[in-house]
Length: 214
Image (cartoon, rainbow, N blue to C red; front, side, top):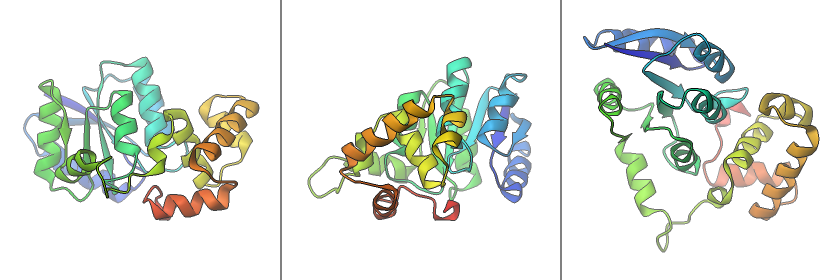
């Protein structure tokens, strides 16, 4: 039996996915969390086989939660869930050690197949993400400038887009205010922008933003 921790900030989504996964004979949802912070805390006292992690959440978000979980539980298998299939997020997650990425629009059987595949030692990508990754960097592909960012810079971008202050970001990322500012101006330089307004415009242009969070 595969044990699963389900992480999503929408109660209706959590309830629906939990019921559907529990209908599978070989899968059991042993815990649910409504934020990245809750997921990290839950992992301190649980050892599920698989974590289904929503990427687009307020607070530290799914990417930072994955980083913290894998830092302390490197053997856990994480599958990311997102409404966005392009942009730099999939690559950032795979660099962290996430083993799967599926769209929230995927059918239930694809989610179940993804869990079974990562448990068998493989990786799983939904077709949309696989196609986007395959064509990145090719002529005419309009590669997102956000792919230039490091994992930590990308996390700072996410928090800036959520309207967090320097102090709030420092607290969430367990960094000093000075270090957060360093990352902030470094990513400005990489993206060739001057302020948060230009960052927001660029994020919208390249689909690197969940408009429900702004």
